[in-house]
Length: 599
Image (cartoon, rainbow, N blue to C red; front, side, top):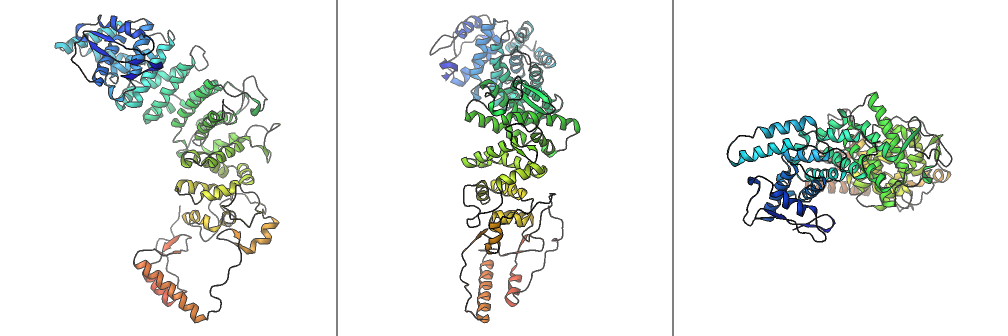
């Protein structure tokens, strides 16, 4: 027994050439359709069966329903059969009848996405089975006859039929690898792409458009070859960008500047929220585009591609500034937008700053910072939530980091928000509720990716200057990134940044000499533990400490390290420790490869 749509329970029982469909709430046309049609099938399709397992019964029912779909049926009968396929295809253990080339081709025809060459090839394959003799030969002949007499449904004759066929294909792709291979072989992505081109045509209802997109998402998520085919052969960036444009109802008052059609000049916060249907379609498009652009940042793009990405980036900026119905849906919509923005080539992110400054806009250095400020607020909201930071926080934090690295105005704006001139020198950098404090706390997070990303963001805002980085975070918090970069001796990394003005406040300047660089705050003066000791006693304690380190090192309890000339930590060998016991000023030699270029 399996629960179906709207409380319907389906149980296929094949007894004495009949199929009953039991319902819990109301009758279904399939009860009548299957009883009538089953008796019209050739004898080999009408079987008397001994008691079978539930899975076997479902498979048998699937085979019979597919046989019906290859005959001429009324739209209501087609719908009933496809509803049955959709319900049966939810069970990943009963997909055998639906993953053959013939079955997938049949479902594609009803979905209106069959490619002509694939359909012809499918008929040729089926025709090769004719005349093989025996019961199987008869079945092949009947199958071939059925294909010849069946005709593909008109593309807009019954959109409910199209939707049910699309749902069935989606179920099959989700649960079965063979089905994915067959879908790729049948070139279903081409059929879907053809219908997606009609995005400005109002003949297709919301469900057809949604499941077209859902099918495209599954194909691009599960098949790398289809992902590449959509991006290159089918011009997926432009195709889906137009789809997103039409879904949001945009107009273009200026180059790379968008507005909602009929509401030009209205501030984003005053626009009505996007409808539920608009948001659903837009999020599916964003997910597909994420799949298609997944490797964009890893390769160079030509001028034509860069223009497409800038056009897409302008639409994404509009998404970022738009709102859906309800805070939860808005955050989900913005999350998909941020994920996709992170895939765009870095030079193309300048479209976030292109709109003119208008009344109510956030202006900084003469540039519209509305989108950047929205990204910052979105990032802080995810940070405050503290749930699954790697999945929820890193996309927005990485996007802000790369934007700040490549765009001077963005970096200066973010620095003014995250690292304002330092006044509080009495509390540790990780203590407090300011955004700087929250990010510094992440620099010691248990998840290495979260820790590194937070440190990288603050380091870029400091223009990759070690002294400034330590000033805002403390040496103890900064040590991990500096060690990884070979910057423990100080200096600046290889980034190219403009000169900055002096940002020291009067409070910081007065307390600078008393600030502990390890903790980053002014601490109470501690008593000197060596006060009153003679030079011989100090030397004795120092040698005692060296011997303790040597003993712990020899037993592999610790691994003593020292700072090399390249700014990276390197281990101290037992021989080095032995020499230190005789000459505390001894400097171990650098390894032979220390002068090699560091990444």
